[in-house]
Amino acid sequence: MKKSIIFLAALICLMIQSVTVMARDRYIPAKKLPAAAKTFIQQNFPGQTVSYAKVEKDLNQKTYEVGLDNGVELQFDQTGICDKVNCQAEAVPAHLVPASLANYVNTRYAGSSIVKIDTDGSGYKAELSNAKDPQYNKRVQLVHLNE
Image 1 (spheres, rainbow, N blue to C red):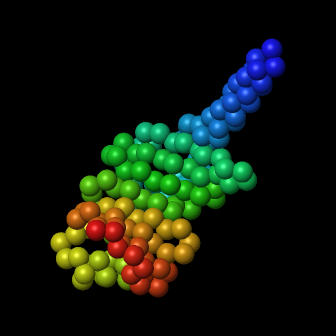
Image 2 (spheres, rainbow, N blue to C red):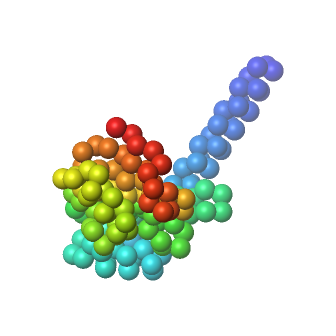
Image 3 (cartoon, one colour):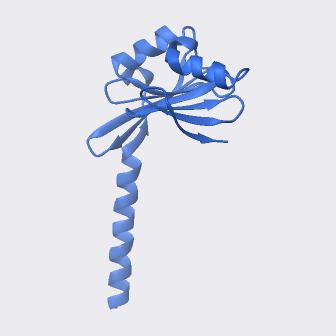
């Protein structure tokens, strides 16, 4: 009897936890994205439509993940500032890459293009078309290279 009660209590806790986790990540209509995110998409990916938008809640923070019809994936912070662009096999639009980073990549990895760029406030992580993953600080100094 005691084991049954413990098992039942554990099962209830597990169910509550899974419902809580599921409530954190949910799909939303594109019109519910922050205004800055919608503007970013319209200005930088004209003619593309949002195929999905998802909001992820973590404590007091929200992030938005957006997929476009052409396969591009974007991530925005809770205010709508873009912090990740993943163009899959295509080059990230040049105007979204800091000039010093683009110059460094063009000089060091000629013939490669940046297909993904991610910023976390302390620097940039770029993924190149040649499968190298250099990480740079804010001054675009190489910090780490995954080859």
